[in-house]
Length: 441
Image (cartoon, rainbow, N blue to C red; front, side, top):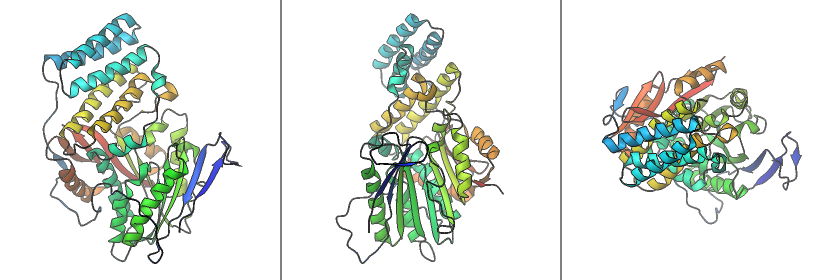
């Protein structure tokens, strides 16, 4: 049985009519109860995230620090010149020497267009972003990522790694639980969850009753977006014998929500997990937002709070420092696309990362949402908010190592454990950090 309920709320939380334009969030609720005796109608395709299931039976011989490939460095006089021109251009822009900066942008474009390689792609993107910033029109590029781009980006090893390690941690936290509720701060078409569903179905003693609450950004097709997610996941759940319910919310920002809106009921669903994949950093430019969301998570009393963030340092208010660190980070990120065994739709992933670069370099204030911070800062922030870490452990490392060998090829990637957290990198440069937490006593 399928049903859809749409409700809009005004910023003060009061219900309004569906036509109200000032709503802070919209709730698209679609429970899906598995019923093998009922007709499901026309079947829509669903897509598993990356592997059959994150089964605890998976293992590999990875050590606590598994490295594939060597270090990445700029090679050749042209590449070195491009790199130094970019830094000099950023410095000229900060010193308001706009004529010199514009001349350097032109030189960078000419030099990058005359050759190929990762550094040339990066140079063009950073030069264009600098041009936007110099001209004072960076805010015009504050565009939301398309659903298609996010979907293609999820195919690459670093995103699959984040999904896999979060799923494995959730699966272990829910061992023996009969009714489970996951709140996903980054639903992204539900691509993370087919693998976990299959793991639930294979679990000794049978699968739990599974409620998934998905939160996503505003999209043009509104309720249809969440209906598709619920339908596709529901079709899979029915096929493999998992009783499943999906509830979808659309929000401009996570701090527009609260625990009551998300209908977390510890009596009905005693075991709760909260999952955030590349979302929390977007709150750092909104005063008080991250504290509000972490407080909301604590109110839900989850068994586990899984987090993945890009291991970058792009929240520095000093532009030149932010620019230089971003240049190094995205150079390694683009190199990871080059060494990946997955070649399909690489262009879309490059576009997705290019939009991150534009936002980081060209935008300021509320328009700059790509405010990544490193794992050490997140540890401090979460500890101060009353969370304690959950060790992802050697088992998680081994299984992530096996996944990496299957999807990323054998060159360029590094995998290591960092005090109970897992980090994926390329040519010794950390790119992604995953961690798990729970509220302290």
